[in-house]
Length: 227
Image 1 (cartoon, rainbow, N blue to C red):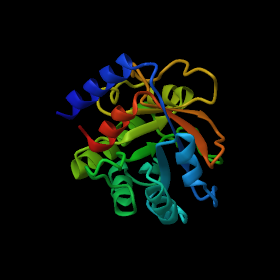
Image 2: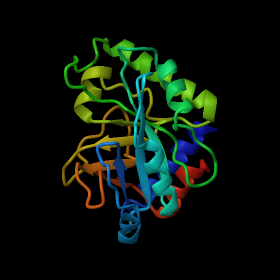
Image 3: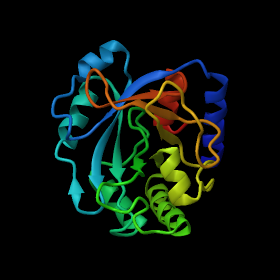
C-alpha cells in the first residue's frame, strides 16, 4: 500500500511539474525565525531539526515546532544521522521519542533522515556501501513499523553515490529531499525519478535553508496526510 502511495505521489508530481510550494528547514542555528513572515510570503511547510544520533536533542525544536504550528505551516522533524555510533533502528527510536513522529492530522510531514558527511569524521562514517545501505534500511524500516510511513531521505548526489554505491533500494518507498544549492536540480541519485523536495539554497529570507516542494499545495497536503 505504501509503495502504491509513493508511486501515485510521484506520478502526480511529474504531472504537475510546473507547480511548486516554497518551504524551508531550520535548526537551533536559527535562533530567530519569522514564521508568520514566511507564511505571508507563500511558504507552506518547514522541516525542523529534532535529534542527532541517540544523545542529542535540538534545543530549539520545541519552540520552532510551536511557532511553525501557530503560523499555520505544515511541519515535521528531521534527524541528523550518525551511522557510526549506533544502529539505524536505535536512532529511529530516539528520533520518534523526541519529536520525529507522524500522525495523519494533515499538518505533519513524515520524519526526515539527514544523510551527509560530518566535519571531523570519514565521509561515509567508516561504513562500506553495503553496510551503509543496511544501516539506512534499519532506520527506515523501524520508522515505518512505528508510524506506517517511510521517512523522507535528505542527501546529495555525491554523498549518496560514494557512500551507498548509488543504491536504488529506497526509490520506491522513501521520498527524496535533494540537497543541491543551484539554479537546477541536476542529476538525481539512487534510482529516484523525481525529487519530492529540493533544498535549493542554504539561505532563506525568514530563516534557515530554502526548500521547494515539487508539486501543488494539494500534493503537499497529501504527503502530510498519507493519502
